[in-house]
Image (tube, rainbow, N blue to C red; front, side, top):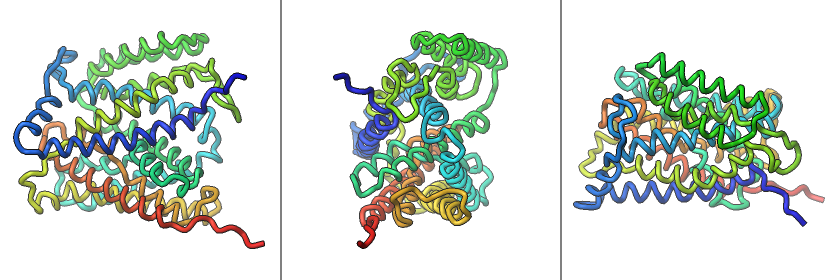
Length: 401
């Protein structure tokens, strides 16, 4: 008897949970190495910034390990993000407005309120305004990893809700990167990217289902975007929109659906290699000689409070108001304490926040390091408090007979 193919969402939750735990280990190792005296710290920074070439664009110069991870491998991560977004909107938890109403409302509030908190804290320094989007992001791998540690104490409905909120959040993050963190546009390169993308959409309309053709298109699109000045990782999301999908409502994924096949193929590489590598290459902030004044500077405090206070306030208030106004129902089988715990976990902005932090202050290594401190502090606090709330939250009471 043939076994049915695995569900993309089930595979996603499983791989993201394990990958989230690995991401935590990679980030902790990076921080440890960056703060050990002598050779370990030197070797860590030498590895991350090692020039391994080639020169793909004069703007970036020789490609380093850090650039290949942030601009290259993360494009594959964003390809996966795009595939997940398309699947959920076409054939998943966001396929109808009724299903997507609560996650969309929660995600929008969960991006707006942290940004406002950040701008309020840093209002005295105009040079920090570009960091407004750093606390607006949610790290799905890290958050799902924390939920995985709770086992059955977290209802399945909350895991699905967290996933859909994070996917909508990713859409917002991609839009922010494309519109607010792009500079020095090369019109010819951008036109080339548009032609490549148009050709990929045409192939989809013609019924072409060969994945190698779309992957070649993705590689060409990535290079054109790299030359254009728009961040190259956006190519991943755009390319994903062209990959054909076959709907499988109420059933496991179709083995002849190119999108599902590609998503399943990329998941393990993203969860167990790309995201942990990104965490390892970007979390290594040196804490030696760090003063209390630096820790309490407006930038790290604004980011930390945006993630910890802004996320939970925005998301929980949005859910509560939506339920009270009859716009949506509370996630099935979850009480308000558990909903609040998940709202806290949405404040884990690790991967996306570090990524946006590097884009926000490209000319200031000091501000990038401060942004890392704020991201690490806010994410860690959100993870610990969210875990504690969910760990000790009372379960759903059984009705009396």
